[in-house]
Image (tube, rainbow over all chains, first blue to last red; front, side):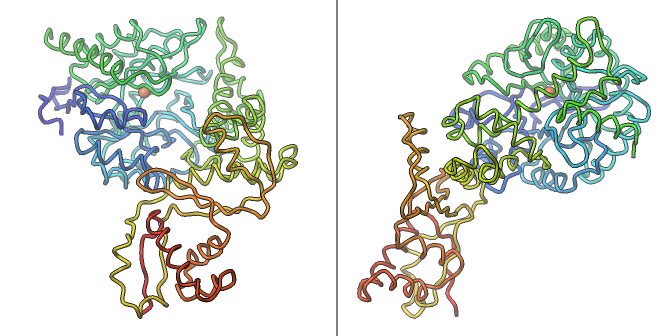
Length: 288
Length: 262
Ligand SMILES: [Fe+2]
């Protein structure tokens, strides 16, 4: 899988698998993907959507998997939660991984519920040493259970806590180092959080360890002027494309995908947006 | 375990579900946005996301109630049945129970039945896969196997008894035609839900078929099913009726195993 791409070398000299340019597998496009086998290098699937007993989602998942490499992306791990890790969830995650043999598995650096109640949202954590230890310990448990490293993704946030002791990128890096896990660098989320909290998005980009960055997310958002919400329902804006170019210049080749979850356009529009990511990527990486 | 982190998460949770402001003390305000406005982004997202999940699972109910009343129902349900599972697949499962037991909805009992119908479709959509038995499989049986023959049904197969003609409302909603008024069904209808070739389906059972299919789903054998049919059919008509019901179940794709008791 992905062997037709050349492996890139990270800052530390370790090989970083490069899958190319991918899209999210969404029900709106199942039929079209199977009928046209579009030029998408790989698909990212939302793990929870396929944790069902049977029916259409699993049928299409298996069919699409016959033609494309996949990665699994989850939203329910609650790695920063204070309830015990959900064993049932982890078991299902492992089962799904056995079914589709993903290139890797990712989730978010956040918490999603407390006292057994689920908020179904990616809630921000306070950036403290104590939280680093707490999260890193849970990542290690998950990695032991799954028998593989996982990727954690930076989320968009709308609040920051007064008792935070470090920047978000210092926190993100510290967790990744302490847990020895990989990073899914969401460029749109960096932009959104930078706007909401007034930090410099480039400081974030230059503040994370390149050798741990395994995947990029690109996406659109909704701009309300005073704040920005991560809605995944618009095309990618120019400022995020610019940050993407800087990310490529800094990190080298990183598998890139575009997230689109609402106001779904014709599939062709997503292919064109992906083509834009590919062209930018090839231009930057050739120049390097 | 991190006690301070748990306290923070509890306070944030209480803000989202109950509007308690304590978490705001821990959150930075900026010139553009005070802490209270920032946390309300999460609270608004929580309520609207879950109402949207319900609207996806219960589109006809939303169509019948209208968006405003449906949102009011959704918010009341979210407060009564907060999500406790990682998957949103199960979040709406108690809506029919909620409607049947809470005012003002309890006074319109067809709403609970319509919700039960829509949830039956959700269940059928997500049920496990299984190979189905065809008419030729049954032709291979020896005559002496027939009396003891019983059936295992596809995991998606389920029946609902309805006292209100909500299938007509559901159908009208689907076809965007004017909704008929809620009318009582006399006698009550039994509706069958299942999935065949990845499509969810339903069928109103005939009056004599409903008890027979229910018994068959509980494992009754062919001889027992024939006895049951003898309640509503002349003796000489029973075998023919039983055979035609069975044929229908097979062509519908309801049966996934034939069990002979030898
Ligand atoms: Fe993302």
